[in-house]
Length: 246
Image (cartoon, rainbow, N blue to C red; front, side):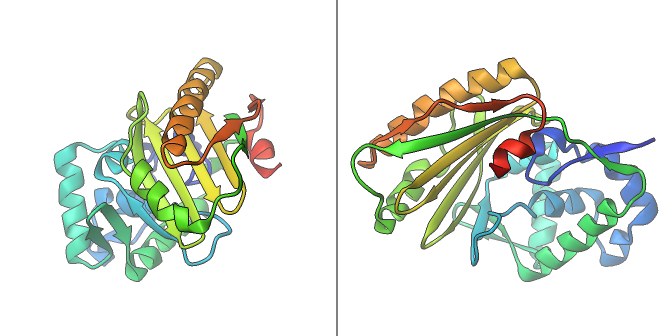
């Protein structure tokens, strides 16, 4: 059987369930004293903000629960064990990988990627959202206020998943449904770049999520004094990676 696999950032097409057999047969995770659930958490937490240096990423409990498709009790047990093993740490706003956690996650990720029964899945439904500022540029001193404003916010069926940040950059991620069928991302890079993208499994879900996302993000940023207008979304129903790279 050939299992489909895409970017670890594309949770809508990445289900960990098919890889149980691969991990059990080919992985030495048990030699590390890890369970399947712990490996799942580490793999999901390999998400980060691509191309941005010195970025920390914090993941919410509910976001991890949806992304990993684990029962609350099983996820709690896995997180606590990973904390004990110093692979992750708990912060006031969620969970973060340690250097050891990153090392372990990358190790198991490479095992999956190198498996001959895993193939790339290209088809995605993506909307790329660009904005224009209507009241001047964004000063990076605004980022902490935006961070506090959007941290943990839910939009319709989108639950807060993670935030990546440093003093010059913010990226928020939301995830819907269990297992995930839609994700949303908002990136803010002062002084004048605010972009977003939605990835979904079907056209109808994509377009309805875009409408909610645009409305709510405009409201939330407006409350911080940042007024934006979203330009017409770029929809791609064939190969979303082409849109995201444009």
